[in-house]
Image 1 (cartoon, rainbow, N blue to C red):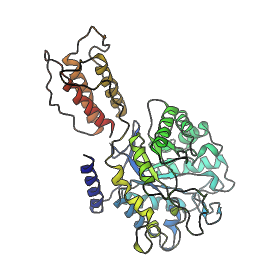
Image 2 (tube, rainbow, N blue to C red; image 1 turned 30 degrees about the horizontal axis):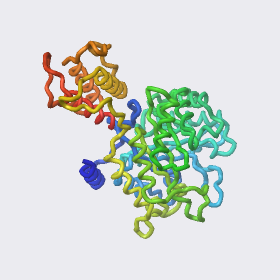
Image 3 (cartoon, one colour; image 1 turned 90 degrees about the vertical axis):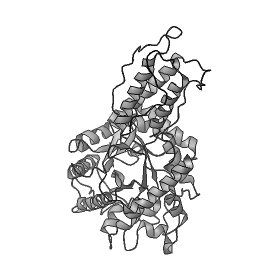
Image 4 (cartoon, rainbow, N blue to C red; image 1 turned 60 degrees about the vertical axis):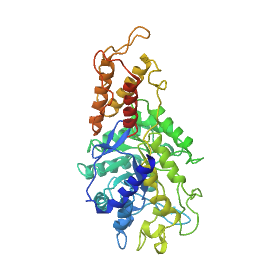
Length: 452
């Protein structure tokens, strides 16, 4: 099955270039993102210096955005107030969107819109990440005001955009109360539909979930610990920690920065010293993120820290002289690795059901009811009203209505999620003996939708 799916994924990438390009609508449904209403696991790439790329000598965004689109990348992460990056030090932003006062820098909102418009042309979503510390002497009050001005300036447009209210807020003197104020008094005051989140520093995943719940954010943005960062256990633990912090019902958990693949190239390793160029590590991390139920994953690269000037596209950096580098190979192979993987952890069921051997128990029905209702909640439906809501162990026999209720409730979740309702080979009617096959089919359909 996986081999067939991988061929499908590769064929999809090849066909992308011929598809019509249009803006996508990003949404949230339960713990997943949606694109144009359909749940989708998202792959992003860091593209921090997008504003200077758009303002540079040749202003070429098309080369990079087309490249991302053709290789199954869903979006980019940009910093409108990015540092003046150079080795060995990086200076404050003096040409970005924000000033150290209460007004936006003249003309720079138009530059941001240029980036967002161009991204929409290539079906790319955009994580717009704000950062107060990159603008010298910017007060919190002025920071909040300028975020509000951006929200107002983009209101009603750019459905492909979400906001990270502060990069790694936990070490910038910002808490859940401040995040609540920014989200509700400054962003949603102007644009109630804008999806908002706030990212934490490496490893602060429980706090990310907890503060997102307290502040009423739409998404939990995490930066997992860099220790053994790509291992399945590390990624799974980070996602579980964020979910524990937020509590049920879960919001989407978005890994919007991981370990960097590369270092800043112009003068050696001057970007902090940590990076990982080992083949498949980033692909492994992205696969683990999907398997453990994250909403999306960002491929992090320092090659986009500085994109101004002629011939400073990301593509020119990862394909010197037209030859695909190790970073190019890692990124280009990411979609085909991630696409065939099941989305979300397989929780398992009580007992293996063996035809003509396993006796159907109340727990088999209750397991399915719990999982089906979780799916209905995730896709915006109310819990189903079950016949015999409380099953008495040892005295109540399995009935046809218990099976038909489950089928009806699950069909509703499928339809709400945008999929065709399941069809069943094992027929069921009043007076018919309940068989293992009736529950096996339901289990398979539940696991399929859970993985979407």
